[in-house]
Length: 372
Image (tube, rainbow, N blue to C red; front, side, top):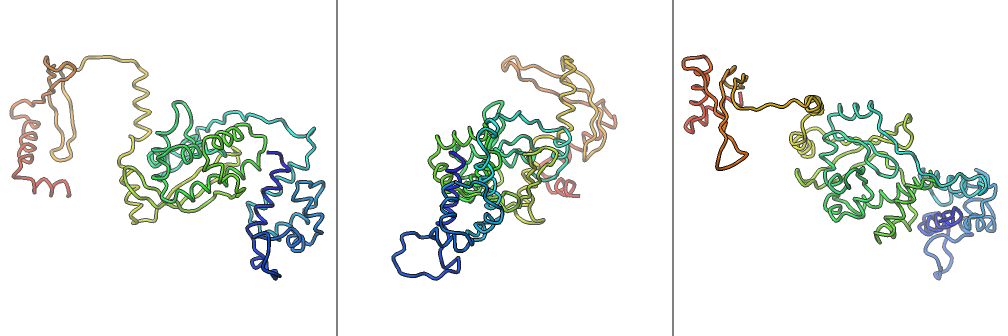
């Protein structure tokens, strides 16, 4: 859509949502042909002529002054996001086509290692995304929270929240208030399109969603814009159930277009308990994962048939046990490992003690030991 068309649609939809009563204007007659304000009423509130406002609404902005735009902002009761969007649309429309940059494909932005370390050290769910809702990085709990989103993503591609919301049938179940999540997503994308109208990847995403989702097309046509900075989200997680989480968004000045979203729950709340449970089920810590990768890269191989292992058991302390491995001829690939200790050794005494606590009649004793 051309910049002039964007201005016309944006101003028309803003004008239609405000009644004369909301604007503090008297209503004469009962046969109004519009539900919102007339052009002459907006011009009156903005302090400009009807002819001038009509030209503005048609996208003929020329060299319109900031004071005139501020008058329109006041008349239409635009919020911060809407005001910024109008100014960006006007700036784009007033730039001669010969001076406009070509539609571009942004270079794929990598996540700096320092940012990944910050994410990994956060104890709460956190992820990093760009203005097209591509999730570029996350910590373990962030991936666990948005596990349905990761399941939707194609192999080798970053998960994308907008595609998940409008193209995945699991989205309405995951987002408790799906209608709000969908509206917020479209409004942010609309604001982002006004911020950078020459972003080819963003235009391609909007085109894809418009082609594949009637619901997206309907919401996109509303021309709503918003900032997505702070708020509360309600999820229905497939593992831990309902979650009500507050979120904060942090823009990254060093990486324009990237932001970190962090989710928290009030201490002691059911959502905090559910997050703690989810954290206990997440993948091992990154430090252990990196340790595995380092050892795997050594390419060492060996058989594991017999030997000695040393344990520090939480109940009986140190154990030094010999083990033997037996292959099962009737079940290829399966094996039984047996552990023994030399008779009368400290390890044999510890095993005997452990065996006495493992008996069913000592179940109460075991509970007391584990809870102590």
